[in-house]
Image (cartoon, rainbow, N blue to C red):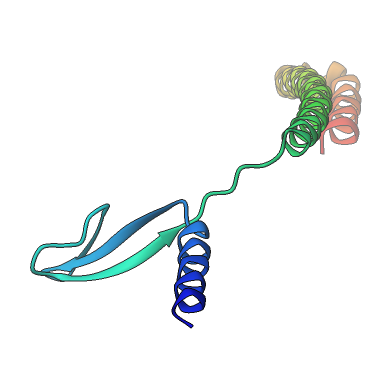
Length: 147
């Protein structure tokens, strides 16, 4: 019976010790938690088992392959995003250029309208009708293009 008990204790000892790679102790000192490889001196210590996992070569190779595929997909998406951003930026520049051109055209038409108004006010009575018609047309062109 003693041989059986001794053998059982040895087997259980290997199983218990074989399940953990290393043991650490969780210590509580002044409300702070710390970890140590040896039991804590004069503090509450709790035995913790740390089990590490080492993947097989096949698992490592598979993970590397998956990571490479993810990296390629990421690079492809970054490149596509940069291409889309470049298109958007080109469209923004084109729109800004069109707006600036339109603003310049409106400023020019406004200036012509102001000059026509000055010409109308300063015109001799015989030329006033012609200047009034010129003023009306320039204001219509300005209103049609810029308002």
